[in-house]
Length: 114
Length: 312
Image (cartoon, rainbow over all chains, first blue to last red; front, side, top):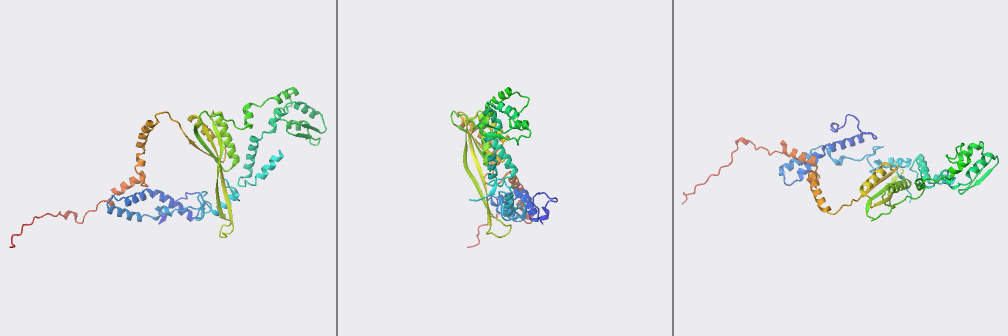
């Protein structure tokens, strides 16, 4: 099913594996469908609209593809594709962060001792 | 000279994250800024007798020593493979010209450095504010104190030459971020390592400056900023009397422009979403459905009941 969203050509330049591609696709799909999602949410919460309309919107929202949900997006490591322990400030997982910090690739980061 | 190099090698341990080539460049620039190159200063310090010493050195073959304010320099015979060349290299470029007569050399050696150039070796000059009204707060940030100091120094000098009274640089509290990560890529949580990133900050305040000049100053700083340095500026503008009325007028115009943005305030909705809502509500799925056998329904007719007369 998600194949319908996937790009024909590779359109990212980071570390590549299936998880990274999947996450990238989810981000694109979420961006594309965001207005629609928000519109449905608005209709559902608007008490001045008839109950039938709101129920209809609820149904439609629940039937949207899971890739259109923002909760599906998970930050991944740029250099290793890892999904856990990724620092937001560097977009690197903890081990990649350590390696690059020791190499001096991350500006200003050095070994701390206090 | 040698002691300075020793210092730099000792410091390089603490700045482990910076590549060695870059640190070397930094150090050299720093050295030029803070402690003037002896070659440039020499003509001023040893004005008297420099030319004579030069002449005597070219003629003598033995060990020669001469002293000045900086220290003593000893040139032994072994060093002087080509005494002429060696000695010329020792002198500043202008004086090293072999075509000069001793008198000319002496005159050149006595020449003063231009004041603007001399100012480079002194603390940055500052203008005095007349009223002390702050116009601009410039915060300079960096991970490296050297880069930061250089940029702050440059900013002060630029402000002086643009005629802006500046205060600072005020050292602001460091921002320290720390991270702790396991040393290994997998398990072994007991063995961890700490990393930190310290952001150093300086504040420069411009007082009583014209806003256009301040803009010019900021633009110049941005254009000529040193590497690894970030800046952010907070600007205040002063208005004449009757600001309230003028601001009210402006606000009216601005409101009209912001109508589309603020119309959806608090609803997590933008223009695109609003269009989508309209589209959805107008679509077929949201129409009021037709009743079953619509055409055959008739509205009920009220029939007036005759009064019951039979019951008696």
